[in-house]
Length: 76
Image (tube, rainbow, N blue to C red; front, side):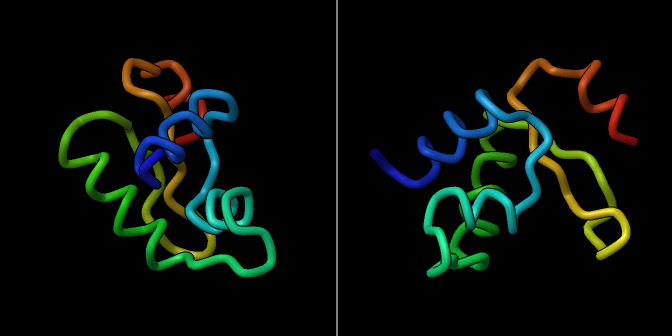
């Protein structure tokens, strides 16, 4: 399973995860946040997932399965 598919499956089970949380869930202590970030951006471009947040420390990007508008609005 490709990393993008793993991320999509993970956020389907746990919507609203940040890139750091996704990296930890996939890689544990050996997390690679940059790889996760690149895969999340690819998923966004292909419209397979949605994102909320501004991307900073106080408002990190949070990722949701496609079609979860209510979840996006709840995290704004």
